[in-house]
Length: 62
Image (tube, one colour):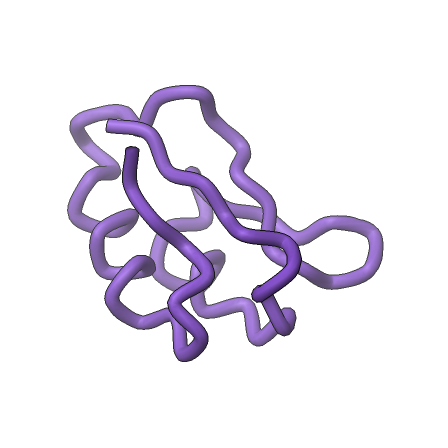
């Protein structure tokens, strides 16, 4: 599974990093960024939780 963040929608709340710090980080302006090309199986639950928790639905799976 891959995840992407729509930079035009992200408001920098950081929910993604809280739920899956191995998958998501923050850029130099504090907005979410994806750290991995493919979500490893052991981090899928956290990544899926981050997708659900994002208040602006800026994260999606592909």
